[in-house]
Image 1 (cartoon, one colour):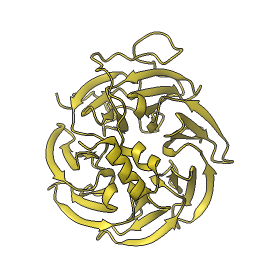
Image 2 (cartoon, rainbow, N blue to C red; image 1 turned 90 degrees about the vertical axis):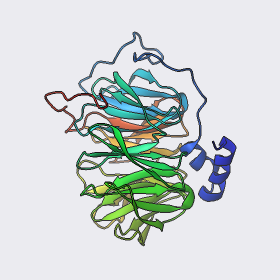
Image 3 (cartoon, helix red, strand yellow; image 1 turned 135 degrees about the horizontal axis):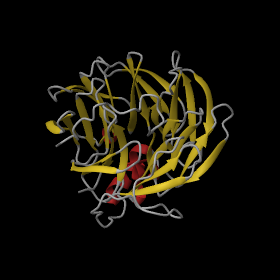
Length: 359
């Protein structure tokens, strides 16, 4: 296995700084195994067990450096519980039937199935290096990127059985899908490339250079948008052949891209610069930008219009008002990464209840 020093050295060469890479795929200290599924109370809170669903909903924040998930009440903005994991979680995804929120504990090789309404741990499942992952639009496939194992695993989402393992070189990081669910597009950070994978067969379709240390990938109006973390731009890529057609300069450390509920804009987090740039969804021209110090990373949008942003290097979440750029800060565990709010309009679970995946 690569040492932390080796990963940091690659960071300095390809991404222009230690923090961009070391925090992206570095290792957290190994922690003792958690053998039960109870929820540990956050500091200053009382009582074990799942947090009740509050009227304002829950925000789930993954604390990669503390091997935990912090649960916040969206309305009061208070941390109500902290879910202990094993080693180093990073990302999460809601299952297509909305029954489970999957959390990947990357270096523990484990996937957790949480109740998205309460945060209760419903199931644990061994999965190899689940760094970043997502479900195809048709809900049939789960694609899991193994950052350090240099593999892309394709699961049957209905049975959670491994259908194909695709070996790749270059630290597979983020991903997106074509609208027809036929192709997965994965950024390969250490080779500066984007690869297209046929989801059904597991065969690579093309591989193309897009820029140093590519990170977030977003299918957007017939094109692919890729955050180029080792530079200062978003690459606009032709999904048919991987060719870069345009570069949209945002700021240093362009990382991941998010579309709010109205679909009228695209938000880009720039980790090194400490900013968020808002692009017009149609023209991709800049509308405005906000300064968010501390390595802004993942984000989600609350019902009140505020933006919740994890700050990887500042042990906190920023809640930003997009109208004027003002923000408040909520303390979290170390190296907060993935963030997800269960207040989305389409959250209600499927009925009747389906069987738990893998059973």
